[in-house]
Length: 242
Image (tube, one colour):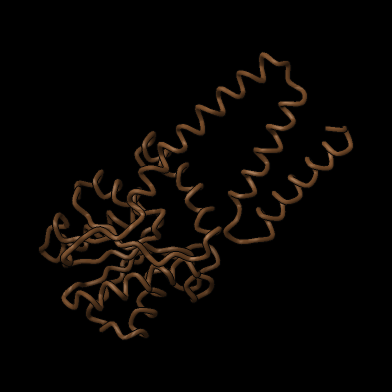
């Protein structure tokens, strides 16, 4: 490849990566992937052959590991066969002001469908208040569900959690405070890509039979972005336990 064309390609990849990372919401990991491709092209051009072969081997190992992690994520990215649980834990996501983000709306849509199908189930909506939020995620979820016809007495707010692990831990504490055992009684609503990690965290907290309820998919390429990102979240959980 001629020198000018090579650098034009590198510049295009970097520009596209910056655009995806900073100008669009939900495409950041596509941007990182383009930067990775640009870095590989530069290494291929400038590294000695022996070192380039080492890079190729390492990249192949990394891709194999990535596929290994994605197997577990994709396998669990669906609603489990389930006859209905007593409690449905709805995991929080971003709120803009007092309005649920699209990701959170999708989770609430999944929760609403489950609650309509299982009229004896009680929802625990879990999430504290983050940057840029004027209400807790729990409050935003409570308001959304009750506006869409769920009886207020069927929705319990857990307004302190700041992570998935806390979502589950604090929700399990609420269940125990009501005289129930989370084991055998819990389903978890989250985005499809997030269910494997959420269920694994529940297992680490002693609830090894939590059912997963997958929220409806959003935009296809945005969802793929989050499936890519989730591999790093799962790796962190495997290594550090949180």
